[in-house]
Length: 117
Image (cartoon, rainbow, N blue to C red; front, top):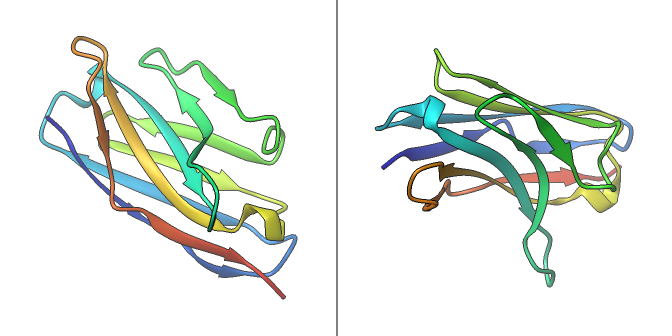
């Protein structure tokens, strides 16, 4: 199992940047695919970005070119650098780890990102 704790959310003006962090503990971090998801009020949770155990990445169309996901296996951390933030990026952002052996998903508690002037 792995436990996840997100941080770095907050209030930012349109056009601004934030860097979300997700700290993991418990298991062999390098054996997990990692992803960031978000859920806006009244909407379903959606995938934002994913990074594989081999560090291949993919992004939702809405954030491609603005957001960057990265991982540091030695520190057991996954990051989401968010640039050019827009009000529609406002949501609770969740970190997720998927075991490559069991396919089980583990979620953090979420961190709020609000983009507003």
